[in-house]
Image 1 (cartoon, rainbow, N blue to C red):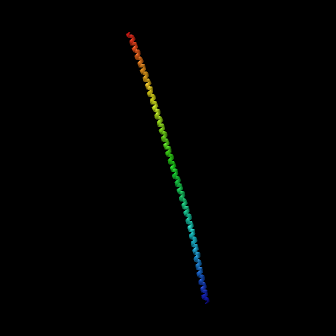
Image 2 (image 1 turned 180 degrees about the horizontal axis):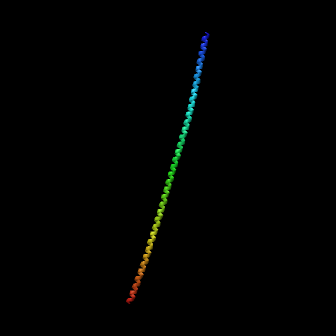
Image 3 (image 1 turned 90 degrees about the horizontal axis):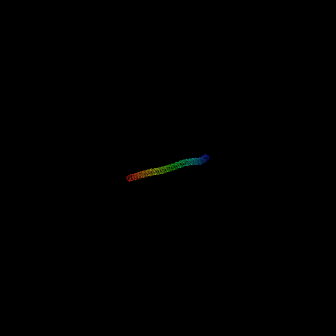
Length: 132
């Protein structure tokens, strides 16, 4: 009888002990799982942060590239406008020089014509005087 009581007490203790061990083991596994989840979350946050930094850097590079392109285009357009202005100025200067040459030629021709007319008049006067 005593043996049965001892056996029953032992069985009860063994069952409780096993239950406590299972609970302890379950809590340990839960803690371990929670730790793994926390580490995974930390890794995800780090990864997302790296991706965000990469995206920001990429965006900054794209903005810089766009800015550089716009500045280059502005410089090109300005140099084209400057060249066009210089070309027009040169064309106006050439036209003015051509006009000046034409005017000079006309003046010379008029002087030549006047001298010719004067010579003819003098000759006519001389002939007229001789004929008298």
